[in-house]
Length: 387
Ligand code: PMP
Image 1 (cartoon, rainbow, N blue to C red):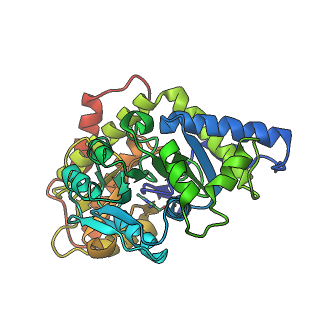
Image 2: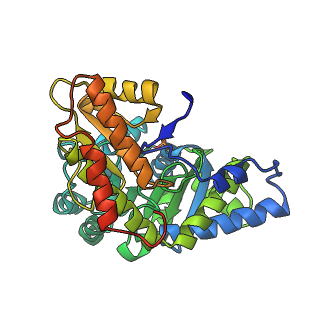
Image 3: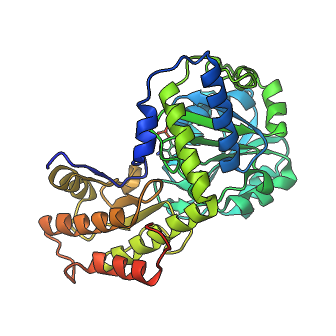
């Protein structure tokens, strides 16, 4: 049927049937014993996924709301802050901070590179640096930055480290407390395989101290107000009740499978995707190693426009991948393999790519070469249960 859709994107990602069913439950009132228990339970599970004992504040909003909350709650006019960026979402920190009237020191690297912890540490060590903002999984390039090394490099400065984990949390390791990350922000719609609409920020003691002195304005995104309500199982405002129900179910699935198993599942899907891309005779844009476990970016062959390929895939085949942002628009395609994905999502993406490319005049060297390489890898790396 032409309406059948295959969502193989870096978010929003497909949601498991149990999660969809949970979201469709009859509405409950948020000021009720049932919802209070649900919220407290959900926050507890989020702490497990964040690997933190810090408070986690929850907002109804997309991931960017949690990013904005970190800026609005911790900074004051004139503060020295550092942003490290090598892609679209690193650049978002820069724009966000500027929109609050501050001028960040930007440690910039070309898109597609891994952030250099030593450069970030050096920028952070300058007198008076309050906070450092980085991205974990840079969704625009497929690069997962080495947050553990960045945290170690920033630690001597005493600056608060803020990590955008919107497209990594739950999909690759992020040891918030063990690595010493002060603030981690994320959202519900990617590796957490829930509908879009919830955003979270984990807040360390050090981050709370900054928040107590911060002079930037905030109301809806005020951490203190959110945390004071949450202690009682309340939210300051009407939350997206259905998505909290969905998220609790999704977190159960993730924790039952075990985080380490989920991370390995993602790395395996990513390995097969990379093998498949090469099997199609295409070059990778994202790194050819286990670090790019969330998103694989591939370069379009000469003469083929990525946006056109994206449109053919979507409109003729019902397959939704992602194109490129900013300077990469038209040059790359991105396959998301986070969340509720399995082997056949990868096979579908590769088969669809081959068909779309052929329609655009680029016939891969070996018919079925992408699918063959991916299935060969799956056969060589079997898993005990269906991945
Ligand atoms: N940061 C990263 C790394 C992301 O991948 C995204 C979403 N693509 C965002 C931030 C923004 O999240 P949202 O669209 O939920 O506001």
